[in-house]
Amino acid sequence: MDEYFHSVRLIKSRCKGCVSCTKRCPTEAIRIRGGKAHIIESRCIDCGECIRHCPRHAKTAVTDYLADLDQYKVNIALPAPTLYAQFSVDFSIETILHGLLELGFDEVFEVAQGAEIVSLMVKDCLNAKEVKRPAISPACPAVVRLIQVKFPELIDYLMQIDAPVELAAKLARAKYSQKYNIHADELGVWFITPCPAKMTACKQPLGREKSNITGAIAISQIYGSLLKVLPHVNEQANYNRASWVGIGWAVAGGETSAAQVENKLVVYGINHVSRLLEQVAMGNLDDIDYIETLACAGGCIGGPLTVENRFVAETRMKQRMQKLKDEYQVAGKSPLTDYHKDELGINERQAIEPRPLMLLDEDIFKAMDKVELIEKILESLPGLDCGSCGSPNCKALAEDIAQGRASETDCVFKLRERVRDLAQEMIDLTKKMPPPLEKELEELEKE
Image (cartoon, rainbow, N blue to C red; front, side, top):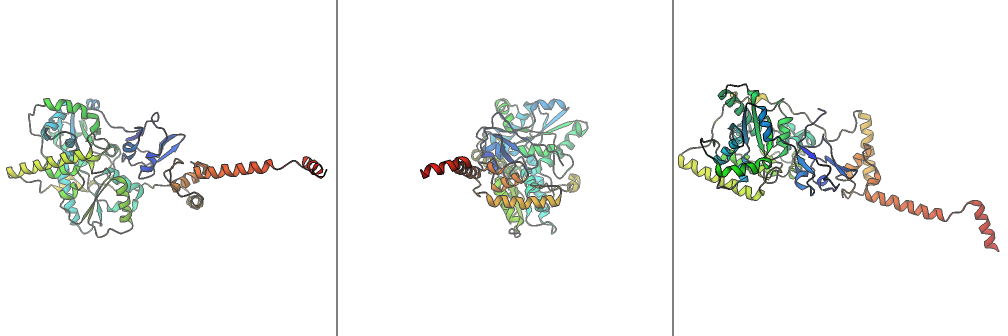
């Protein structure tokens, strides 16, 4: 695929050419050229790290708007569990779900319901002998794309099941197209997202030809409007169908806890994930059954499109989970224990194709020549990885030079050496005289 959709975009007028984003990007997808950041589309995984760390707010995420609901006859909101953590626990989950109806949605279907089903799927899949160990969670789209771009050898380790939001969208389409007696394509299914990677996942999905999700609306975009209507919500029906098991997916460790995985690893923060995947690629973690990987710090509650401080959000989420757990115990209820495998179409997933991080040349011989050139250039660079050249490190600069996208003097240390050599050459030149004048000077010295 030559064309890529990306939610993460650059606002050039705000960019001052600092190197904060280049140093944080896990796939080295950003360069500073001409005093502005440039995003290499084939490398970007829409993790949102640049949004999180840009001091000038020059990175943004493109998502859908509430106005887009007008394009469909019926609109369904798919709230991420993270949404609940943005508001005080004084507002119940039912109140928040009804608040979404006040904003213009016709129905609400919790993503946490999909999470409960996926938890059971994970548990079943881990019992299958053919699953490679360690199996890697496919729930975070930024991590899936990180593997596609940087660790293609680990694609087969991704568990072949849909993320909770994709499954929830499929169930919602089936349920409400029947209820309203309309074609599934006439439904607008909107994910209320905490991160830009989810927007990219619905516009350009991996593992399936088309997503069941129509679009994604940032939590930060609707937060203000939702906060205004919550005190005046009139609850007419009980929309809360998910238990604490599904809601807990918003917090790091929630997935493996829900799936009751004992031999597990939980890692969050995209750069921490990248370093852990290096260990998996080297075969150092074969004794682990399952790895829960999350691009954002603390899990989805730390997403760049959220509003609340993640530590506050985590506390609220745990309070909500405990409250639900207590309510279930009092009522003698239990979380979901079974699902209909055939109805969910679990085997619909397609193979994910690798996307090479660095394609030097289509011609293998030219590519080999460039590899040698990169090694030679790298040896001449200082190896400090300061980033002042506009590339994230010396190796990336060497690649850029070999590709004709940068020059050696972009390195301030090489530039200083060049200036010093030129200055010495100028000094040496001032000591030299043209031959006729040189002879006359010698005669004068003799007198």
